[in-house]
Image 1: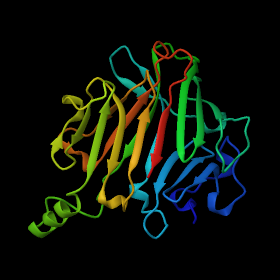
Image 2: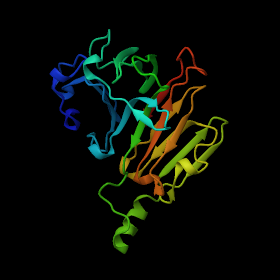
Image 3: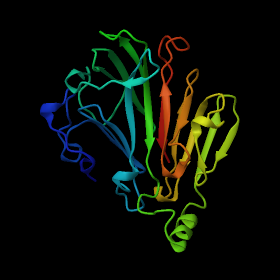
Image 4: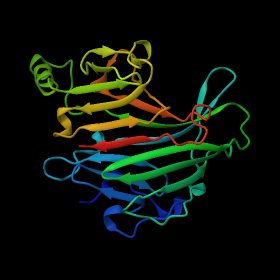
Length: 269
C-alpha cells in the first residue's frame, strides 16, 4: 500500500535521509498499522492517514497533518510562524520503518533551533519537542505541534438542497468529538452546530485528551492525549462547525516542563 501519493519530495531539497522503499519515497519515517499510515518526510512534514475498510488510505483530504511550529511573538501582538529550513534538518538515526526514540534537530528562519522527538510503542506515536536556541530572533518564541483536521465531508456540502442537507445529517448523526479536560471532566461537543472554540468554554482548563470520530473515517477513531503538565487547545474558524475543520495545538512550556518530558500521544483505533 503506497503512501507516496500524498506528496512528491525531491531528495535534493531535503535534509533528512530517506527510506529506500518505493512505497515510502522521500520519507525519513514510514510506519504502518492496520488502522493508519504515519510518515515523516525528509523535509520534516508529518502526517497520519487513516485506512478504510479496503485497507487503503481513505483520502488525502482526510489526512491529519502534525505541523511543527516555531512562532515569534511580535511587540505589536502579532504572532509570526517561522519557516522550517529543510536543509537544516538532521538526525543521528537512519531512515526507518520502526520509529524508536527518534530525535530530529532543525532550524527555522532567524536560525532558531528546535528539537522534535518521536517514538512508537504498541501503535501509539509519541511526540515531544522544545526550542534549543533563539538564533538571531529577539522576541519571545514558542514551540508547538498542531494537528489539523480538515473538512470531514469534503464531498458533501451543507447548505445545498434539502436532500443534500438530509444526507449530511444522516452521515454525521453518530459523529463524536469528546474532550477530556485537565481536571478529568469529559465533554461531548456538537460537530454540526456552528461554534467559535476560541470564544467559548471549549478549552476548559486545558485539554488532556481528545477523541475524534466521523463516519467518513470508516470506523476509525483518532485519539490524541497530552501528558502532564502540558495541555492542548482546540480552535476553529469563527462561527463554523467542527465537522468543517479544526485544530488541536500542543505547546511546549519550558517553565512547567523544563526537562521537556511531556509528550503528545496519537493513536488511531
